[in-house]
Image 1 (cartoon, rainbow, N blue to C red):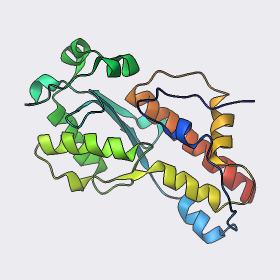
Image 2 (image 1 turned 30 degrees about the vertical axis):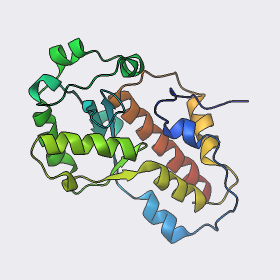
Image 3 (image 1 turned 135 degrees about the vertical axis):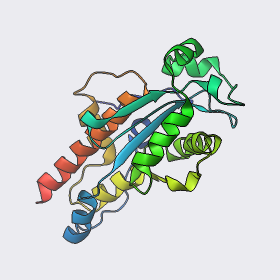
Image 4 (image 1 turned 60 degrees about the horizontal axis):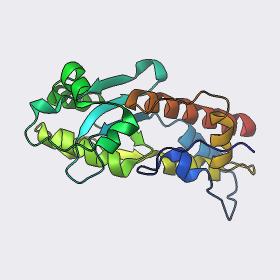
Length: 213
């Protein structure tokens, strides 16, 4: 039996958390509501960070509305006061070293400015809104921006809604399994995570609305 891939236990992902999600009740298909959900324009965002501790900071951010429009930035912590936290276990997870950040990373304030320009007031989604909101807030606040200018929504909730509103017996875990088993295992980096989530969301939409329209 095909099983969704698991990411390390320190940070649960959309795939590992929802793979075993079961629905106890079925909701009747609503054409109007599903049409609205189907047409939502969304940008997906993802962060990598120095650790999962409270004083952690983002070391990489990526976002995109389509796979071909993904932006990704490594963030050099040397530009920011107080960005000194580091957990070697997190390095084992994302494989981004301090040396790589110093050599290839940009001033985080430049990434924050670009985020404000492109994401403020938009529908921005994450499969880990709790963590990604924390790192978004750290980046924007330390760069002198109002953190409320960008709000990160829950991609899990969105996918649950469109599945529960559509007829059929498949769960989100089934879609994850079908999608994941036909693709290669990816590295855990922000840009590649955004690419995977965009592709998966498009796959679910196509399956659902192709069945009902």
